[in-house]
Length: 186
Ligand SMILES: Cc1cc2nc3c(=O)[nH]c(=O)nc-3n(C[C@H](O)[C@H](O)[C@H](O)COP(=O)(O)O)c2cc1C
Image 1 (cartoon, rainbow, N blue to C red):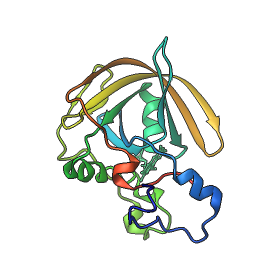
Image 2: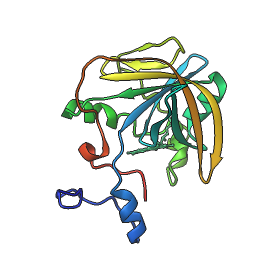
Image 3: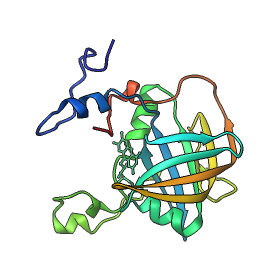
């Protein structure tokens, strides 16, 4: 059964086109990328994440140029990848990371609201890994990476990180676009 047959509303798009539709059929894991800078920690929702080398183990994440996460990774050279489970509680947890750190990142926000920052990890239990990046207590699996390379491509920056730690707390399926129906492609 395809995503479209599953009675899920399509994301709003003023004009749909077949290439966007095909791209949106691709399946992604839904990850929470942890980072830190100074005394602040941050988590962002990302699905453009994949392993790109066995030896050394390298993982790629594609980041928007104005993401706070990119700023943090540039400052500390580290990021974590948190994988969640597929229960409703996992979806709700993931949803908390949909906002940007800088409210102003979303176009059209009224001026007073655009000034605020979202400390998305407030109230969410986590520990700091060996890189200092947040690892969610509710993550079923996690990786910690040291950023090795940045590649500017189109409207994103590819950050390639060497995996320096990781673990599995519970084996089983992880949260993905198939579960949430949320898309970040097209
Ligand atoms: C389902 C979904 C997947 C996303 N995947 C990515 C991604 O792979 N890379 C990215 O830069 N932004 C992605 N985003 C958007 C970021 O979550 C968003 O830009 C966020 O503001 C960045 O957070 P930060 O500014 O706190 O770092 C995605 C959003 C959603 C809803």
